Amino acid sequence: MDQYAEPWMAAAYRHCAAFPGQCGLVIRPLFAPDLAFSYQPDHSFLAASLIKLPMLLTFGLAVQEGELDSFQRLELHAAEVVPGCGILRDLMPGLKPTLTDLVTLMIVLSDNTATNMVMDVLGIEAVNATLERFELHDTRLRRKMFDWQAQAQGRENVTTAADVAHLLHVFWADPALRADMREQALAILKRQFYESKLPAWTDEPRRWAHKTGELDDADHDAGFLLLEESAVIVALLSSGATKRERVRLANEIGQVVYERFAA
Image (tube, rainbow, N blue to C red):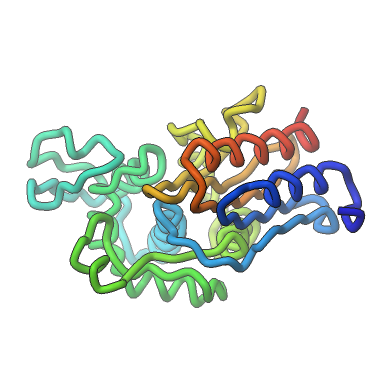
């Protein structure tokens, strides 16, 4: 731990090293690249709902290029409804939300039905092309949410903390994404409903613009701690141990980052 320039880095290392499962972590202050921290950044995890972040980016790029109409309405059919997070599963078939509505539900409520509907519009190939375009080689979208057949065939959505952090940097600073689309994406991420992980032990949970993900054996949270003039990127992925231990790790890391950069 003597290698770390600041006490908060040593604290982040201690929390990760003490975690009884697997974790990958990247912390990147956008205003101070020399203060970046990582722990097992290239370890591969099942992506869970973090795979919705490259879908959000693909949506923004397609809209700004005129390839998609964000106000296009899609009809909800009973056959499209899947379990898990979200609200569409509880609503009546025949509802016609806009594509922007579906993207918002995909991020804010992690709505799996909305996610699959968005995926049908974007196309899995287009999302993976976005990943390649931005050199996110360790992240892949291979199946829809709750596609049991694909899962049985071993087709899983995967990612790493390094890729997620790089993807978040694209949202923040890459000129390929137009300013208005960047602002829309950040506004959606700021409305995240689930705050039990990175923001939970901080005084201002709404200063986080982020996306969570979870499976039976995994818990992730990734996004921005928003500051007055900049932000800190945090990408934390974890698997194994117990859910309580995974969530506690996220609480600890969120607290470390907040107390160093925002308190």
